[in-house]
Length: 138
Ligand code: AMP
Ligand code: ZN
Image 1 (cartoon, protein in one colour):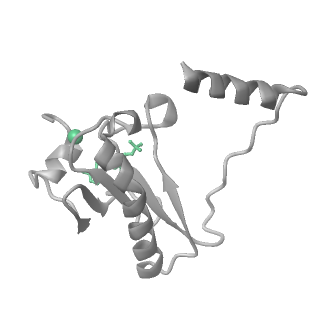
Image 2: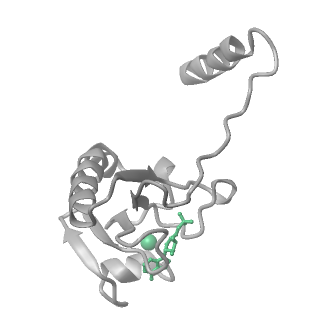
Image 3: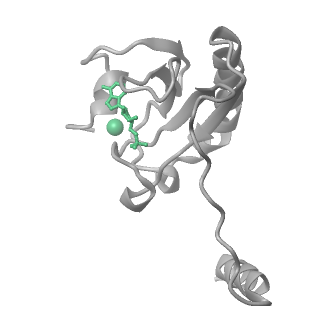
């Protein structure tokens, strides 16, 4: 897609530090890493976000995430890995070519996890589950 920075990386029109390439995916280092070794996995075929991934990309993405996570953990001597995907502006997406963040983590690296929200009343969890199940049928 024209004017998409990650399509330009796929097409090698702009440089990137590629660490793995398959027929369908590219994994390269983030230029602004949260920790060193922070990697982005992208489908070569443009999709704005998770909702637009074609069947082939979505069904093989899990394998690629697992494969790259193991490599990054080992190569960077990480204590853990965060796998993060932001979809839409509200979720923090800034580049609208679907991508998955593979972030090496270290004990005491200072990143805090989000505080969980509390349910506000008895039965709310059941209501929410029912709402989601119903929407799957429509
Ligand atoms: P997100 O907020 O999930 O859309 O994250 C987009 C990520 O892409 C950010 O972490 C950026 O640092 C990263 N990024 C943007 N441009 C490039 C680039 N040319 N090469 C590598 N990473 C990039
Ligand atoms: Zn693109």
